[in-house]
Image (cartoon, rainbow, N blue to C red; front, side, top):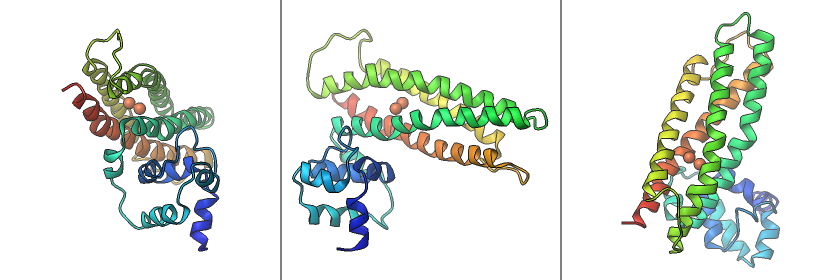
Length: 235
Ligand SMILES: [Fe+2]
Ligand SMILES: [Fe+2]
């Protein structure tokens, strides 16, 4: 067996999806639960879900070298798409946001007096996190279950009327989050630390750049893949 196949087999399913979201579609096709069951290695998942190991590994390896596109996500069934968004992007925000706050507060203590951009930066990071945490909750507890209900054709009483109402509200919140991210990008000179920056400063900017990329992808998928699919169910 090739080394890359062995690496795949020993990696957790959730990690493989986080590294390349196109694999979510492949796991779905092979009947492998990549969300709640994503904590086990691919090797164990193949046995548990009785998947064709050779075919699955070859399909995953064929992803290498191809450009990442959102095509795979467009093809995902709605329940898989919702699981994917929560398991990758919502988990990412919850994991990384507290670190950004911690790094920026450390920077305020160490450099806030001598560098005028640091205190506003910490303020914008706190504002972004304060916006995003309730946003994730609203999606997970109100909007996503409502979309799933529509998909399953379950009649349910909702307090918000038509599904377009919470979708519009979430889109406004996406715009707000992106505007804050833009301010952060300006303040940090596009996440480029100055020459004299200490390690925490460098780690903070690198983490912000990573957060920016993930947030833009997260919002793109919700606005352009998830919401149109949900609205099409009511057309
Ligand atoms: Fe989200
Ligand atoms: Fe969102």
